[in-house]
Image (cartoon, rainbow, N blue to C red; front, side, top):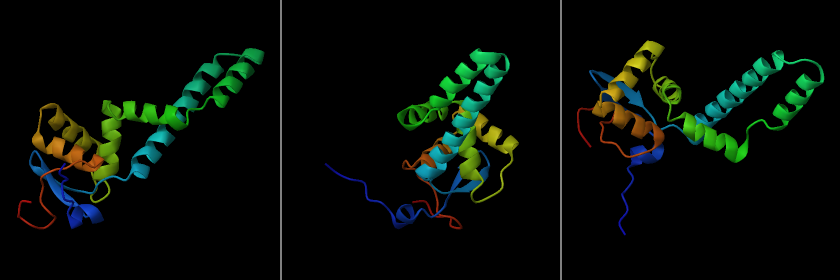
Length: 150
């Protein structure tokens, strides 16, 4: 069984540059707490907002019973983890990952993030490299401020 050697830049999570279409982005791998911390907050907020919308249509004891049941079952643990994994496979999930990852080292607008996703839908190789790197997979890219290929 062979193993792939890890580089010092990967070990230290130094940024790399990845070209998507004609733009170069500096990116670092996202830490699990960055990914799942944001996703957990978002998914719980969505759950509470959905609960509030339904509860507003109810009244009296029905409303109280509904709210009590929903609040006892706020997603956590394996349920929130599975929901997060499903969410990052959606457009909104990919958008959120890119928003977190791209804005760490440069300012990127929501419109530009949508453009990057559009490039992915057109099978742009840079998009695949970008997502792979953000999520912790191997990519071929250049170190920042160099023209050398790894």
